Amino acid sequence: MEEYAGQQGSTIEAGDEENESSGSIATYTAGLGFALLLTGTSFLVSQTNLLWAPGVPAGLAVLAIAQMGVHLVFFLHIGTGSDNTNNVLALAFGVLIVTLIVAGSLWIMANLNTNMLPASAIMEMQR
Amino acid sequence: MARGGEGPAPVRIVVAYGFWIFLLSDIIMFSALFATYAVLSGQTDGGPSAHKLFELRHVGIETLCLLFSSYTCGLGILAVGRGHMRGFYLCFALTFVLGAAFLGLELSEFVGMVAHGAGPSRSAFLSAFFSLVGLHGAHVTAGLTWLTFMVAQTAVRGPRDFVRRRLLCFSLFWHALDIIWVALLTLVYLMGAR
Image 1 (cartoon, one colour):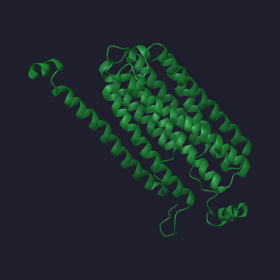
Image 2 (cartoon, chains in turn blue, yellow):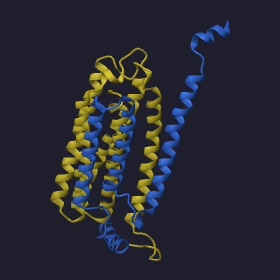
Image 3 (cartoon, chains in turn orange, green):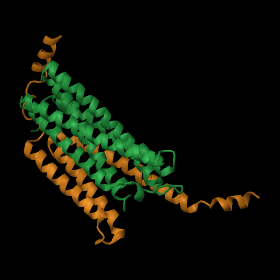
Image 4 (cartoon, chains in turn blue, brown):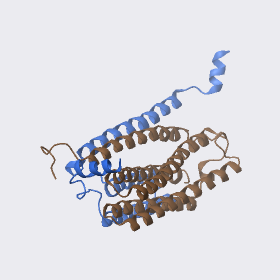
């Protein structure tokens, strides 16, 4: 069993040892630095009174999306390499579905919320 | 590094691709709960609102724990790739400690909220909050269990190729939890505490 596993490792996956696209210490440290910077900015933006209040949620959303991008590139190594095309396509599909679910739910529920009669009016109609 | 006519892709690439598909499906599941929370976040039924409940300092420490655990996890994968087993064990021990600290802080937050009458049954907002944040916490718990098993397996079987592929999958899972936390932190805590 042990022997077999070892053999499998050496034959099928030959050449798999090096060229691991899992980055370097510098990549991870840069990613951590960017992530800390963006998180810190998010906390500042959410707490300060200096910014125009209605714009703050949009700013926070942009910062969050930027940080997700940083995590994808520096930690998950979703990049532009030719090994990576499938991963990027799958990610694009995932983003599409997530957008449909979140934006669609918010849209439909907001629409229902504005078009629905208040409970008192429904009682009135049933009389 | 074109792989056009060079035959099938290496096993490591295929395994990582499959696991990435799983992670994306997991993120899609989370997106349903995010949508639920976004719809229900204002429905407090006269109970405590997000503004009153959340303490940003607490959440900031949780975020730092998770970020640094992601970093040490990545360093651990690099160490095992280079055969530095001592560095690997050190990094994964740190990852475990930071992940457990995150979980402890989150649980203490939950316990405090329930003790103050803000449990999941209080309002639609709190139901959505506990489902979303609780599911992320459950993922972290699963991740910590997986991490423990992987360290044991690495100790017993050595850093073979199949062990390293599993370690790679674990690191992808751990980093993906961090991405979900970024969305959660922004939508639930930062926007809620304003």
